Length: 310
Image 1 (tube, rainbow, N blue to C red):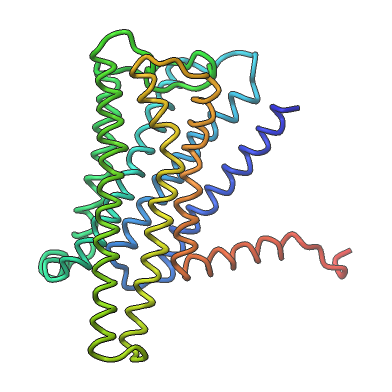
Image 2 (cartoon, rainbow, N blue to C red):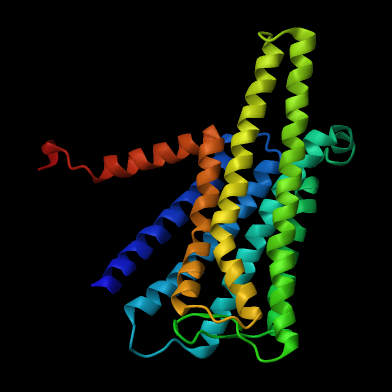
């Protein structure tokens, strides 16, 4: 009964994630003729999250649906583990690049006007390194620095070796924790706070020059408030989603034994980032929310049977 509940829950989460990320891509493509770099980064992030969801949740569904039966093919299991890891790290890199872009655009606006005028070219400066960064750490895991193996408890899932015997493989876990969790956290917090302080100073300057009720003052205050919400959501969601899994990796690298169920649920919780990221876009960007609402209304309208058709 418990397995059935988990299967239904994972199916709903997978469907929700795919819907949200596909809607994010549709919203950006269809509603914005003049797309900026931020839009393109968000679209790339939605693609990464959407594909990660399909591979990540599908293997979980397979595992719970065939529990106690024939195990998944070893090669397919390792390929799935590699893809999920690659896309998860790529999504983290996208969040970092999103904050870096906002930092450059607002704090160093003159440099942004000089070097980031071409939207497509500028977007590639952020998107390509994000995909390469995730690929580097994923390939490093299978090139001898670590390895992707089948988990001992959740045998349907393959991931990096969390309990290696030699120092070389443990050093990968330390490096992964530092460069794929701690460094992104520092960059996200630093960039977000610098942008917030810059907007706050701009608002104070507008109040002094134009007065509290001037249009430019209100617009600056609205922008500052919107960024404050964005800051809180990005930092909060990143910490909530990735901290449990990062701590598990770090403690296991130190050869500290943890309850296996803790690693299981932290891995499942990390996959919720594929839902949380587009949800933040829904909250921040009105166009995204409007597209999502229209799609949901059409879905329910099509499912309602008219009395005339009975």
